[in-house]
Each structure stands twice: as C-alpha cells, then as structure tokens.
Image 1 (tube, rainbow, N blue to C red):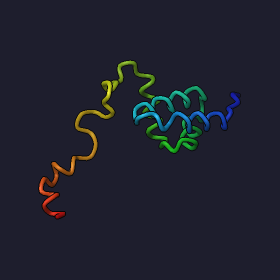
Image 2: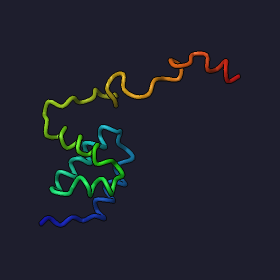
Image 3: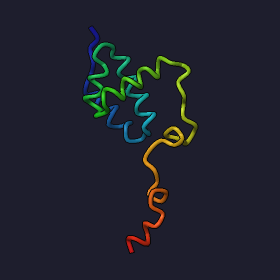
Length: 97
C-alpha cells in the first residue's frame, strides 16, 4: 500500500494551483492522482476542489498521446466559453446610461 503525505500534497496544490490556467491545473492534478493510484482521483479532488469528473478527463488525457494541446497563450478551444456581452447585446452601454 502506498503511503501518501496529504499535507505535502495539499501544500503543493496550494502553492502551484493559483499560477496555472484551467488546462494546466487539470493535467498537473491528474498527474498527482495517477501517481497515487487507486483512490487518487478522489483524494486529489477533495484536496483541490476540482471535480472528480474534470480530474478523470485529465487522467484520460494523460493516457492519450494524441490529446489536443492548446496553443501557447490559448486556454480553451476556439469558440468555447461564454459569448461576449458585446456580441449578445451591442447596445449595452446605451441601455445602461
């Protein structure tokens, strides 16, 4: 059975997590979970606050060498995320004034 130093893992998560964007967080936490082995996803999820589903996606990405890596400076796939308020309601400034 693998012994896990939870305080060291928590410390790594607290120190590194704020400096990473979404994709990097998922991949680095998935690496931690995979190194723990069975139950690692649950442990890392509990310590980091990242959902088990997102961690599972990260573990699967680590197993697939053909997984799409975002371009440098890009955090999400093109078109992902919430639409800009300027596109949804171009007259927003007039309405608010």
